[in-house]
Image (cartoon, rainbow, N blue to C red; front, side, top):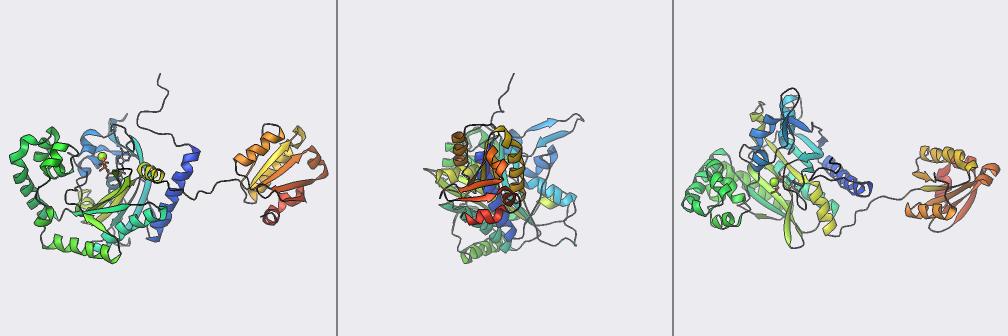
Length: 425
Ligand code: ATP
Ligand code: MG
């Protein structure tokens, strides 16, 4: 029997999920400033939604899909990424209709699934935060969306974030470049890795992206896409660069960056950061002007990015960034004796109803152990409720750090703890 979690998955326990929630909240708040709304799509999709849009020859589709046939014989896959499902949804819900204001800006937060070899920062179930903007060809959308990711990293306090920028141009520029790359790589075909020999026929741009040493050596002097841009592609790229400069966002141009998905054109980008000596991609995205059309909608521009939450949290941790997490209870109630049990229940509920976070002892422990709990829970105030207090109706409330105390009636606590709490600060 296999009673452990599946390989490449993680349990996120409450101490950690506080960090997740903080990062997610920061993302939501940042994206809302840019007028994004949240979209939630299913965790699984028809296999075809992913396969051709992400690309039949990509690693994601050829090796990493969590696909299966359901009881009705449908070919289903757990979603490996967020863009294809969002585009599918955009078309299916007719968000292209003229009465829907453009651009349509949507973000998502949720799990993604890829059958990969698990390593640090590489899981089989992982989480992405992503955004998609539909219906703007304006290079300002490229610049703004990149700036939004950067803004988000700054809000979190991440250091050493470097923007890597490239363009894939439009279809004709890309076709011209593709041919140039084939002409360049063919004579050294034998030196390439097995995978790249295959890529050379199927999708030569992908050779640029290979992590194999022999491939990286081979492409070192490969022709650059920048020499194959036509007028339109050049103008778009220049405009994006100029706008990033206006916003003071520095970048490096990385012409060997092609991204692991097939649907991009024009601008593509990655944000990389340093963790120790190694560089890690934490966010990646770009423009995809053909995808809505592919899903049967009208020709519509798209721009978006996805960022890996686990990797982001890893970077926060490795960079020693302390998140301003709100922890600590407002009140802890120490309960002494069976006769105080039911009153403690009433009181703790009344405090919660008044808007305070409150906890109590349930286990009838010694007073010292209960005080220790109050410290462990970082309780701001402490109430001791014993049988005497229940009889007399008077209790002592203590500020758990300054030790300042005040005696008040139980009725007062039940109806107006706010003023008691304020008086002890
Ligand atoms: P890589 O080259 O590292 O495999 P990728 O090109 O497959 O990345 P994307 O598909 O662009 O990655 O996904 C965007 C982000 O999602 C990545 O930059 C990374 O932060 C995160 N990510 C991708 N795959 C995984 C995974 N298996 N586990 C954890 N995070 C991941
Ligand atoms: Mg990958």
